Image 1 (tube, rainbow, N blue to C red):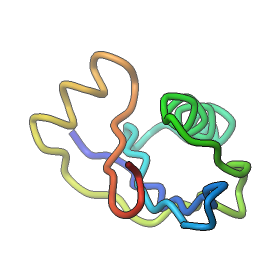
Image 2 (cartoon, rainbow, N blue to C red):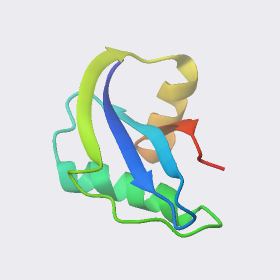
Image 3 (tube, rainbow, N blue to C red):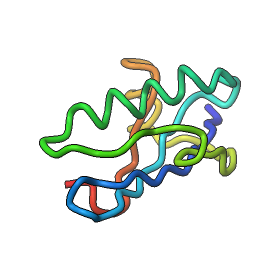
Length: 87
């Protein structure tokens, strides 16, 4: 399975910037759906964050998915790859 990687940077209320990738099937082009995945992820955090819009989240590239990513996409439609300041 090939996936699209959406590079995302969101300001936290404490001033730190979260960096994470939203991974979705490569043929998913509906940005409102992709952004909703990121918003769902942000709501799961115990701290407040800024908005997630096209300014914070942009398409980066397409790559081949790992088994872990495929399982998550099959289960909930997306996978979040946490990079910086996500916890």
